[in-house]
Image (cartoon, helix red, strand yellow):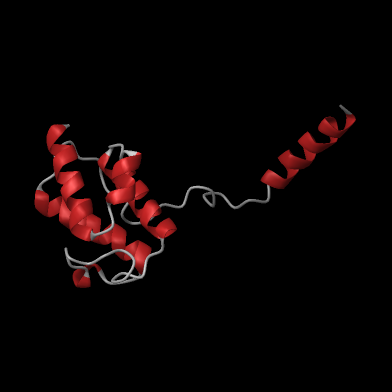
Length: 119
């Protein structure tokens, strides 16, 4: 119990040194306004922005046939993070099975088209 009493004030003091806003930095993609319906064109554009942020390849150079790993240079963690960004932006949930199978730009777009159409 003595240790807990000592740690709590120290944690509160440390928090005072964290710059305001440092905990919640948003990427340009995640700061987009919420939409209720998405067109295919908007989905494509948003997917390319997400993948561009994850791969450092300009969005205009990302093509539907590109694979995340060999064409965009993304590792599995980058791919999962990109799909998680899409989940947050489009307000959907990607199944574990789909997560394993989405390895290409057009697969990600197709999954989103189908999921958002059914929503």
